[in-house]
Length: 252
Length: 252
Image (cartoon, rainbow over all chains, first blue to last red):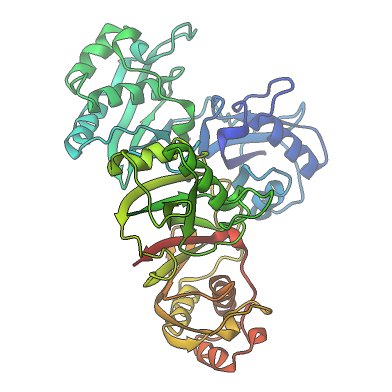
């Protein structure tokens, strides 16, 4: 059996998820913690690669003994989240663990993932959302936010999202299926929530930048369809910064 | 006229509010920022002294020109929050400013203050509430929380709160009037909210530790009255750590 863990992390001090030489990454920390806990070398397979600065409320990964397809331990599965968290630094924690079959794949078996993007839409900075939400100081009206929500709904469906992909990306297909997308205002924050079977590089951050252009009145909600069909990155909005983005849910 | 500002700060990297030699404090930062913005030396009077590590969602302070009872500036009052925040580090911001009479006193004119105390009551750590909520890992039931709320209500009224004051404190009177007090569960967090005309040293943190003892069943809600009447610090609970405490509201 493989171990499937659900983790959360504050992305600020990580160079993203994937292991890189001499960089502090989520994968490196998980690898070290698992090896310390179980007493043998482990391999970690993550559900996706998050960029430097991106956060996770829920990221999934499997753990197996190096060179094997699973692992064996006497530790009670219910105790694994706390036990493994004890080997992790304060900006990352395991909050759930379960056994899955040896042929389960943390990345290929994902049905859909949900991201949220947090925008602090107050005219002044907020010390508590610093590094955790994008500060956009021009306060948008309820009507602006309603337009952003209408624009977000236009993302729903199966489309070629080339216009919402960072240039220079190399993928076999740029078609993705967005299953839900919405924008709401909660207090001083504007929250964009989007779920899809997969995401292109910077897709949620470019969608967010485009939604801000909608809020500003520079792009109308009806333009989203045309931008998608154009496959032209230059027609979409700016790439919103990494620090407002959270991987929020993973469904297998 | 004096300038009354409302600020928020993340307490983690401050040695509390009050200026101390060679320490990073909120008052020192405000003093520097005001002097930079207005172009003359200023004095800052705060609404209270918060301890090292304690946060503020809303802390009030007045600013006057050093040696005078007010200040004169050509900067529009509406622009002062952003302008002054631009001179402050990321863990502190001014979110509101208004003019008040020269004889207004930020500390003596307070009618009441409200504090909140955040407890992360999940069995695992949460990277996002690290340093911002006290992690209490034994998960309390709805009934435990209801008992804590009943206990909190016993704080309401005018009492001698000696039992809820750090030993060695030196104050002219230990009588305070608590105007509201409640405990509620929101997701994984337990929130204690208390408002009073004034607070003794460590009063909210000792109340919180006592409420946790109620949640654990070590103290019954009916015992609170007796503990208050005893004036005996040793009968109350532990002092909860500083990092869960927030000054939340100040009413003049």
